[in-house]
Length: 204
Image 1 (cartoon, rainbow, N blue to C red):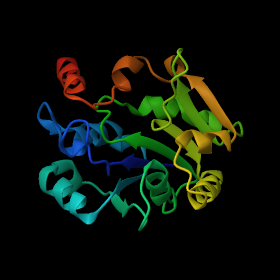
Image 2 (tube, rainbow, N blue to C red):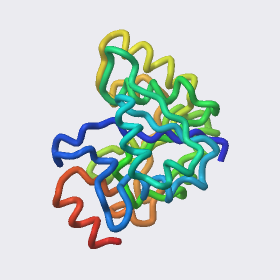
Image 3 (tube, helix red, strand yellow):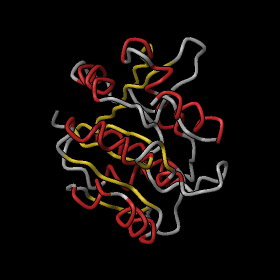
Image 4 (tube, helix red, strand yellow):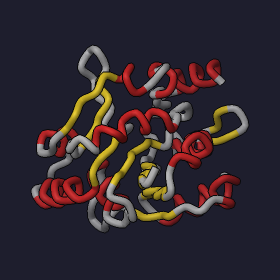
């Protein structure tokens, strides 16, 4: 796909007590699992970090990052949060189509994005999976770059922090999670706690 993948890897991991991208799952870190799963599906991968020290840590401990062709960028100065991280990645993306992935969803697969990609051809500016209970997955989603940047710039200028706020300002398709994933309970599993990690280890 002519799509840029933005991997969000700048979070501090307060709930689990460590820098989450480097958390071990089996023989690999969480971010290595994500990248190995997705690397063949995109022609550009941008990793968004909070600070340069995080890049040093990642490259020192992750073989796939030392060998792969990745672009790094950082949260804008004096800005933080998810919207700032997404903006940092989108602003340097070389493609008009953008996919978002966290660095702590170790079972995510390319077909999830392939199943969303076609809807951007229908005029939607954002495609976001939604669970039957209404919970949405805005960080495993796809966007059209130009309208995304316009909405992000407006929201950041107004000190907006909510991902929902940008979706409400775009032509967004909320798509059933079971339409984009064969096993969303596994493929969308986000490792936020020790309990999540234990569950992920059972799924390897």
